[in-house]
Length: 105
Image (cartoon, rainbow, N blue to C red; front, side, top):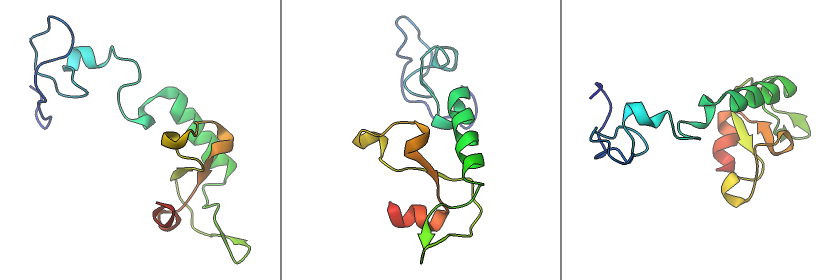
């Protein structure tokens, strides 16, 4: 088993006896599952993220007394959370600094 990874039992792939290391699958079968890995690992998400950050000038979009927050950042925020029906569409994403992201959370 690769160093630094935590075993979570046997691989969920039928007939595979290897130890599961991520999302219930071994290293060999993990890559076969569509949508595994963190959100930032897919090509489509990286392109979307880059586009939104460039659109917002890598600057927090929160308004303070009618003026835009001056903090430069690379954090994205969902206006409507995915768990509440939001999507990865551009109109649902914005750039927020860590402080405003925490306040929103």
